[in-house]
Length: 166
Image 1 (cartoon, helix red, strand yellow):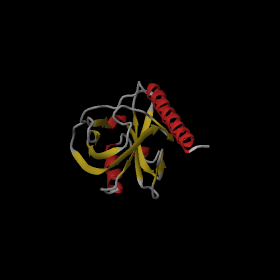
Image 2 (cartoon, rainbow, N blue to C red):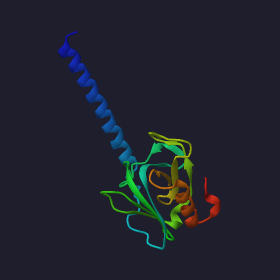
Image 3 (cartoon, rainbow, N blue to C red):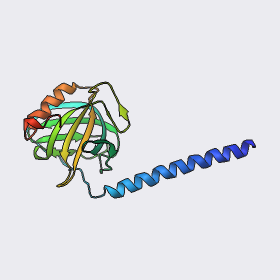
Image 4 (tube, one colour):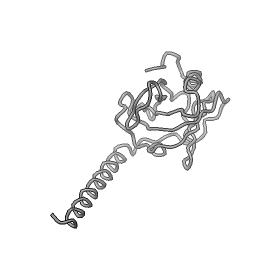
C-alpha cells in the first residue's frame, strides 16, 4: 500500500465518522424538537449564586440519554442562581434559563453522566419538568462553589422536601 492510499483511506474513514456523528445529532435534535427550556429569569429573593460548569441534560433516571434541548444542548460555564421562585441558569452566549419552583422535582449528587466522570458525588443534578410528560435531569459541576451549599439552597425551593435524591 502506498503512502498516498493510506492517507486517503484515513481521511475517508475520518469523514465517515464525522458524517455519522452529524447524522446522529440531527436525529437526536429532531427527536427532541418539542422540548424547550424555559427562557427568562424566574425572579424572587436570591438564596445563593453558584459558579461552575453546566454538563448535560438527560432523560430522568437515564444519565446516558442526552436531550438536545435548545440552549441546554452543549457544555458551558454556568452561574446557577437559586431564588425563592426557582433556579436560573446563566450561561455565556445564551439566554437565562429560568426553572420555576413548581417545575422542580428533586435534586441530588451523582458521580457520572454522558461523558463526564468525576469524584464521588462531584456532580449535582436537578430534576425538573421540561413539559407535561417529560422529566429531565440537568447536571452541574460546581467547581468554583460549594456543591453542598448549592444542594441546600435548592432544597429550600423544592415543592416537597422528600423529593431530594430521587
